[in-house]
Image (cartoon, rainbow, N blue to C red; front, top):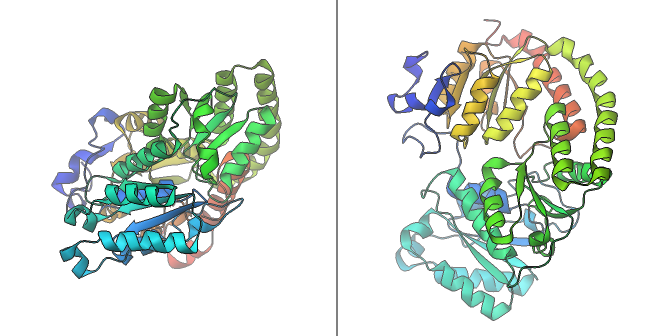
Length: 449
């Protein structure tokens, strides 16, 4: 094992080199205490999934810090209402821990109803609520009876599992919202699960599907509206983009509504093209298949020559990846391969054994694979592997810059789309500009020391 000094003994089983099978890596477990994991908490996992529902109200039952931590957490755009960009909190204090916070929660719901006209309110239970035992289910039932709208409890105390547990709690809340008393007849449309309309990416994907003749019933949850979400059971097919957060929901909908699902990815030319064809064949319409083939050929002819102009600057460079889900990491490895780059380190917060098995076959034998890494490990392996760029989120940015390594934000705060054919060009441009900036020669990065 390399870098023994930087690795806690309890973390050794969560770090592998690609010659080891992905089955051998420890994953989908609680973070090691004291390791300062990059992973977010259960509550945060629930909030990032539900927050893009544009006409929902999000009431955080807990200290003000929980609400501020996740305020406007997604760079998700809306084609209509903007209420989802506000954050509401019961602001629990020390006395509420002693005497309970249910009265504050009831008062907060009353205040929202007096000032607004919400279609649904999500009530998030945070760590303190999990400790003091407020009965938020009873509060939600009483509020629904009083106001005639859906008020849904999201059981998400931060200590109750991993970020992936939060995803499941959010999916349970969505199922509670969309499940009808009587199942409706099916349409010919699809639901898109796990795209959060970061920088308008949902609009790009929906335009592609429109071009090939596929109707979208509901977006879950980017640019989502409550009434559209309630139509989700009528779809004939679910498209799962963020597998880490939405596979659980897709399986629930398959069991409850008999909607099959396929996993898709719209990151990179290869995955975008493959996904469009898989959707066309799953829909099973000959005209859709024909239009998909023509559209893909047209886009490839437009995009690939432009990508080749970047390739000469990127070929042979080394990339490090640390993102939320395994499915995104797999797409990023393939994108870097399209650019002629080598992925030397790859890690995720919520990857599964199946994800890591695929990853181990996509990277070279000496590549490092990590699950739920901490800053010390990421820094150590970036230096050891000589990474030229790190792709990650806002928490990883300082680690890269401190080492003099270029950085690309692929998380939910970004302001420009990276999905689809347009997004691939944006990604290549950002990688090129970040990695080949003259600033690294001036400050001396890890590869110039």
